[in-house]
Length: 169
Image (cartoon, rainbow, N blue to C red; front, side):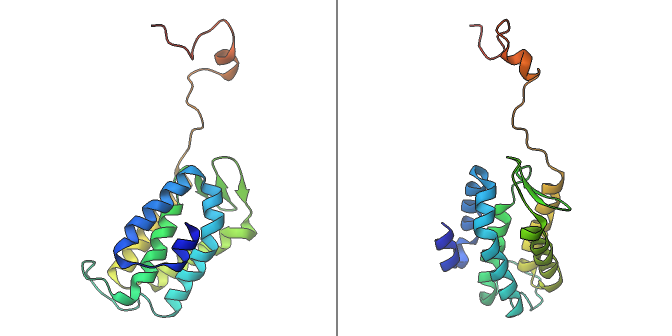
């Protein structure tokens, strides 16, 4: 998938590739983020430096052809952000499985990328994607992912005298 995403760009498949990445990230957020974020960051910054989304527009129905690659990579970035599983914190990117990527690995790069998109996207479609990514980042800051939802403590649940995990049919 990473090879396909990094070598392909189809304007009519922008939403589909983001959805595919979201499904991958739902299964294994740390692995997906570690694999795709460095490439995604590099490509988005490269597209912005090359002038993508630099023309102001007020319509998303007629995309600017030269912005297709930017939208492709923004969709991939958006798909990687799973609230409750990827937590964009002040010091780390933390994942629900308690693994974390240190600040020096990705946090500063992520904040730099977000700032670059906020400052540089002028076309409506570009800033709409930037807004979605910003909103999802805030959601990642405030979401909780429950690994289990039992109404009792583990000791009580696991005790032989209780039957919380079985049905009484």
